[in-house]
Amino acid sequence: MNKTLLLILLLGSPFSFAEKPQQAGIASAHPLATAAGHEMLAQGGNAFDAAIAISATLAVVEQQSSGIGGGGFWLLHRAQDGKNIMIDGRETAPAAAHRDMYLDENGDVNRDLMLYGPMAAAIPGEIAGFAHIADHYGKLPLKQSLQPAIRAAEDGFKVYPRLVKHINNKQKVLARYPSSKAIYLPQGQPLKVGDILVQKDLAETLKRVAEKGPEGFYEGETAEKLVAAVKANGGIWTLDDLKNYQVKERAVITTNYQGQQLITAPPPSSGGIALATMLNILQPWDLATMAQADRVHLVTEAMRRAYRDRSLYLGDPDFVSIPTQRLTHPYYAAGLRAAINPDKALPSEYLPGVGDSPKGENTTHFSVIDAEGNLVAATLTVNTGLASGFIAEGTGVLLNNEMDDFSAKRGVPNAYGLTGGEANQIEAGKRPLSSMTPTFVVGDDGVAVLGTPGGSRIITMVMLGILDYFDGHDVKSWVTKPRYHHQYLPDALSSEKGTFDADTLKALKAKGHTVKVYDGQWGNMHAVHWDKKTGEVNAASDPRTETGSAVVK
Image (cartoon, rainbow, N blue to C red):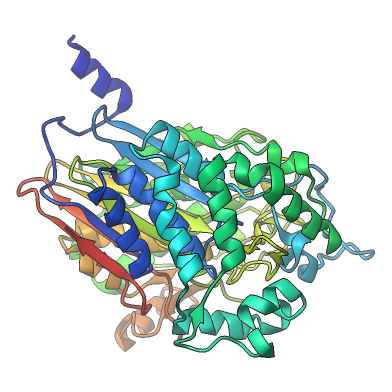
């Protein structure tokens, strides 16, 4: 066997080394971030350098969704050797964290403590992710890739409606902390659309990282300021918590659907396993030829079962044993499929497991294809909109509230309505379970790179985008298509307004579904497609938000 063939078999890569796109495509949540990525490509960098620049710039201009006080997953495909890997920069629980830390004297979860202020914050992983990607996959020094973000923080950017909405929604929490109030509520009033937001402290923090690497964040001046601010406001971080943070490389989840390979996120993301389970269940059915109500019913029943397994089995793989092979095996899906009645919904209470509405857009995603065929799908988060609301004095760093992604008490839902069990209970050094699902779909004719924010709805939105791709629609359609969702508990099929017509709603209710239609829109999907027959690259950003930016050069 020749070495090239052996390498392909070992890495599971479907790529031929001779194939390259004619262009580079980037789709992200903000024009400054998309431009930062293309700037790195123009300077001789690759998709991985672009990913650092995009991530760091989003940390400045889209703080309601991500930031260097948070973490994320970067799914990478390296064209030169076909390597697929996920960089896990997920946050970790501080060393002083423990299972019952958010329970009051009555044994009830203190939601304020778990969501707001420094007690809500896990140890950030985003900076460690940047450094790891630069050291192992990029062409450019980290200092160079951080320059667009430093400019955006130092010079400022124009405030836009979505950011203003989150500031207004979290105004009372932001007002608790002088450092947060100074940034988001200058002169005691929320920022307005069109204001210029300058963040000098954040720029200085990024400069220290540019000069010193990750040690400029996890040790020294920045670390000391972070810990001092956290402790002064009742938190439990220590300098050792920061110094001991480690980024992880995770083997990807792979599955096949309709003859194409999916490469997606492994635990501590629940997304890849749930996606594989759902698509394996749906594999035998010809969804494209079905009436809408019949198709939605079957997809919903697949969602219900995958989310039930999420609540039971999934957590940080460094702490719990996850039956990944079983959960992603076609035989397991066949057993789940056998219990699906094509004419009747199965109440979630009939599926033994753990035991209002899931929320928003408070995460970010971007997709990149460069001219060498390198791919990045990255989903980054601080959890809920504007996270804990706490900016650490003198750093400009808005801290995440990812501790809410743990199960604080068995059967008690988090901010997104998700319930969890022992696999996702709080433990020192543990990563909370995530729904982030950056994904590649690879076939003989093309490659799709996609993902979205959206809390508990992330996984189902990615699946609906994938199904739309398999229906033969273009990248603009994937990001635009109306969305629906079921997550096992609460037992309801929810949808965006206008997703179903009156006849479909009637038919779904006749099958036993409780359907809840919401006025709001979900997610903020950004996707790129490479047509391998022509070399053409296309990119699209979700029209649901005003700042999406998709550029092909």
